[in-house]
Image 1 (tube, rainbow, N blue to C red):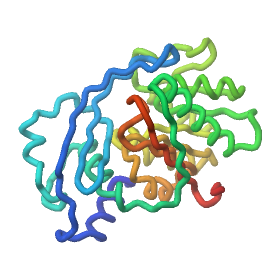
Image 2 (cartoon, rainbow, N blue to C red; image 1 turned 60 degrees about the horizontal axis):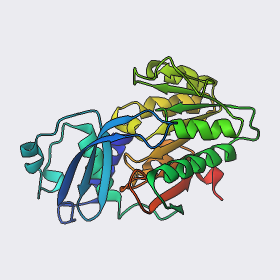
Image 3 (cartoon, helix red, strand yellow; image 1 turned 30 degrees about the horizontal axis):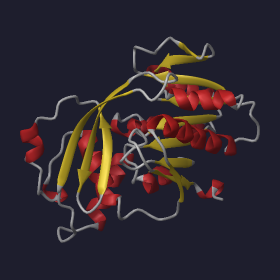
Image 4 (spheres, rainbow, N blue to C red; image 1 turned 90 degrees about the horizontal axis):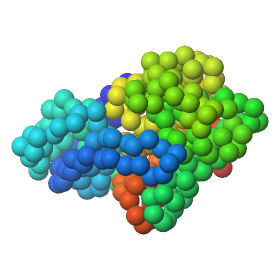
Length: 268
């Protein structure tokens, strides 16, 4: 429903006269391991440019060049896209220059090892602001080892869920159990805070996660590289805090800009 709402908003608020032409597409295979706290991430991500720039991680491993060439120079309204991640990346680019400016900016610098820890600390701090006490249960949906380690350092109880069979069933740092992603909503029902990856938008699981969280008074944080410019829609859907990380991500050397967007109930 969130993605459909974004598409409908675009159709209702823009016209063929608006500059929604595809000017650039990158299809990138990503193998990345920032430090010993993490598994090796093995993903495909897409970057799309029109007036602005957007991105999304994808479960599709192969994007033939000729198929991407077919949408180059086309207007979004003229496209019929069957790939969810690709459409998210395009919409993310469209809204990169059109989203609200109601956010706090944090800039982190250094190499990817340093930034992976700084980024995790930002997410942990925003998690702690949502609860009155550390005697809580936090579920990390889409396991990020550095986030979990940071929460443990703050004496927070954590459980992880993921679909990666390489880590399902393992205990991270000898404390944190990683459950299969099929159990995500069961655990959210028991948790005080759910930390969610933006990739749930591309896997069509975010709507159910938000619904479950609302029904059980579970606070939600989404850290979004996928759809990082779509934060207004995430907030409207009921997410409490969005940690938005536009491309280029923290995995690259240099400066990374992170935006923090909060539901009015938690605004500074």
